[in-house]
Image 1 (cartoon, protein in one colour):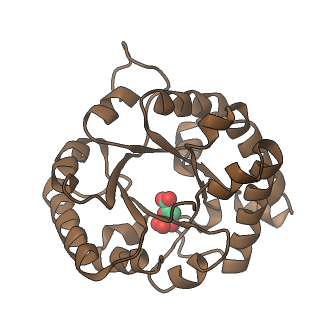
Image 2 (tube, helix red, strand yellow):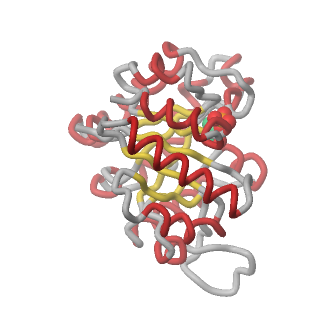
Image 3 (cartoon, protein in one colour):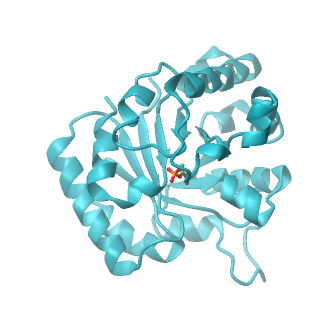
Length: 254
Ligand code: PEP
């Protein structure tokens, strides 16, 4: 059975005190109110990973993600963080290829592949993001874009490597815009991703791959999105900064 996952991407928000408060509130709410099987993955900015690790270490449902790593293992790359560094401060997951990184930092497929390989070398689960822009959707190119983003990164990995990847479908037009894809629009793309993974690696790999939806998920949109057969949870930005809202999103998972 593939995992259900609610992941919170905090982006470049909060200070340390606010981050600690958010974690304390979340652990309390989720421990008290949720008895399902989903994993909760929190992706704070780099400086909060280690303090977050301490706050989360006795809460086995919770896991930590970094939002990015650099493409090299170590060396003279001022300002960057490596896979080994994030692993050593408690991260078990890492978001790779978020559309904000593709858009503002020009990250290429080659770079994303290098980052995924480094994650895997250090035992970190990559959360690989794909998603089309509004103009791609409007010109009928959604599946073409998703196929390219999948083929040029994911499909260069071995079957064993792909088994460790979590995919996040995040339509760019829905990220931070308040515009959520309809459950039908999201399901259609999730089913497509699962189908092409199945064609390349076989049904058992595809069945085991968790595919998360991201793009303005809220407590009110989560239940219908998460009830779609190929949607295994969410990658949540804005709503993951509010403890009550994010706890309700987690509770929408079985
Ligand atoms: C994200 O950053 O991955 C995201 C989906 O953001 P939001 O939920 O704010 O749209």
